[in-house]
Amino acid sequence: AAAAAAAAVEGEEVETVPSKARTADGSIALGQAVSWSGKRGTVRYIGEVRFAKGEWVGLELAEPGGMHDGSVMGVPYFVCAPKRGAFAQAAQLSVGGASPTASASASEDAAAETLPSAPATADGSISLGQRVMWAGSQGTVRFIGGVKFASGEWIGIELDEAKGMHDGTVMGSPYFACAPKHGAFCPASQLAPGGSGAP
Image (cartoon, rainbow, N blue to C red):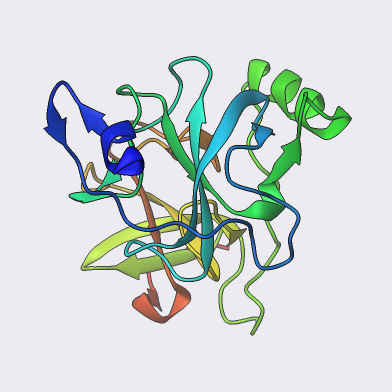
């Protein structure tokens, strides 16, 4: 009853998804203070999510800079103020105050630097700068590698036309830079080599 009352918001009880007490490797515990992308927060959820595979950690950030209020795609994992909620994987978190890596990434963010990309996919089928077709649209590969919003290898594409979803930055992480609505992400299996005359 105490847990249900704690999750009550303005007299409206929100039944959240049950959380694990700590991550599978034991490195992160519920209620622990952590740093993520240079931001301080508290762990409010540990476990599986519907929007990606694997184990994820739900954070309540100390300051607005998140993406949600603990609910993602209609599923309430935890409860916090709007724009204070974020999800990350345990490997992206440092315990307590900002670690040297977190402060280094914070200064990189200030310089609007993008995250490092692999030169090609693991199977070598797609390489950085290659012209491709995705969902009927032509584009250029701008990023290859792991992303924070899902597991596995993803390809970031700069589309020729404004048929994308973003400008290369997703959930606050700058994977590559392009014009708004020209950025898209997909697995390599959804791409076909395309475009003409590109080296």
